[in-house]
Image (cartoon, rainbow over all chains, first blue to last red; front, side, top):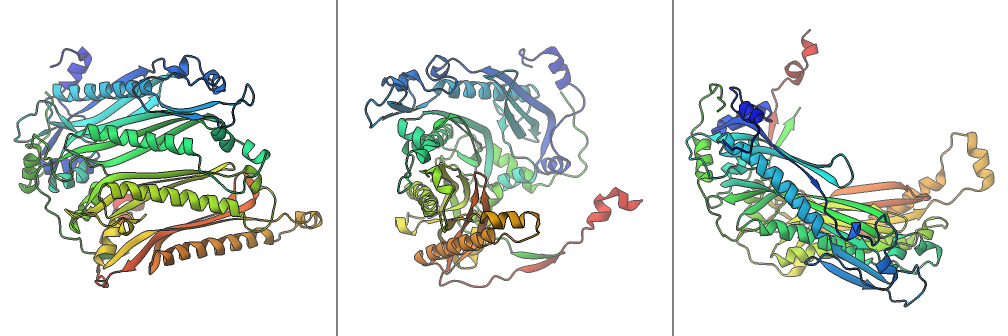
Length: 303
Length: 281
């Protein structure tokens, strides 16, 4: 039994009845696979975003960043994706944006990663305490808590033991349960873990991006044709590449199935965009060579 | 330690043995598909395996095209600049998705989700799908790599029937619904009357968009288009502009095309007596 768990939690986990988040159908499928549910396990973590450039001065609140208007490229956290866009017009006015920049908000990504990893670790710690082999039916939620800049990570799943198998050093985890998990095993895969990664890219619009994304593009003149907004395309493309690269880096030869890609964007001003991309999936391991099923017989149902 | 209730049924030997065998593998196999990502469900992965195909990687393509906001307000006929911007946004997004698929040696992309936003200042298109290929197959020439919004299940069924997807065909048209004369608007204010300017704009936009989509299918040497998605109606930011968009997967038969022979099934479930307690009263 881990000493980190509160006494009440230890007492609850030692209770005589199992708890689970499984539906009746999923419970039946677990029994058919030789998995016995032993407890509903959870992990929580509330994280406050650290202080990055967005909080330290330039442009906070959605206005024009001072660095952008003065012609100086803003300093951003090092080590991440950065791309600069220079104004092609020269000095037009004090309000005219002479620089635009896409940059990766590494401090937000790190905080998100730390929060998710802590919640996941705590859930698995509860499962270990119960003597579980794995956790099935894992669901997570990431939501704002209490005040701006505080995010709650919550993971929940059902710890199971596998009849007749030695206990692993650390429990495996998967968001699959019931029939879907049974099909995974029958296909020769084994669950390893759930993976959740995030990328965060900030777009400080250049004068051209601001012009195209705002109403100004219609008021001053009507160009004869549409053009691609390069800065925005680059930022969005890079944000999606980053999460996929990050997920691949955690696979270590395994595969990631059932990927769920979610995009959240906030636009405080024309072209100024906060892009957050979250990627979740089930890391699975091929345990035996593929043994494909025969193609299912097509059926027409009469009702 | 918690206890579990007695098992209501004996554990079948086959499945638990497969579970134990799979969980006993401690190290990843560094095979051909190591490190792949896929948004397919386990069912979709299995059905792909049944036709000897497998996912290769999750691929993404997107584009944002500017549109001057004044074009939506006044005019007559088609808003050509908007239609062109929409076509370019799709074309660029498809090209980027296709390039990612080619880079991982895929033969095509299935289950492409289409996300679109049409705003007064710009048009956004994002495509996300899973690149797939026959197991252990070599890469195809780039031009033969297809993009399809058919789910993996439908792709497998198409494949078994001896057809193949060729490309994603898109057609769109944005058209002005001309304002009525002041006199006509006043006269019709209290009448139940068809607003022919909107009806005609819808028909016009529809004819142009469908023609463009079919032209795209012919250009791709397809025999037809399946699973067409249609969106139409006014735009929330422009009361006198109508948009009509259609997209679907271009398909063509292979020399092995044949009709499938489904079995007919009848469900014996009586859902009313099984689930509606009130019906038993």
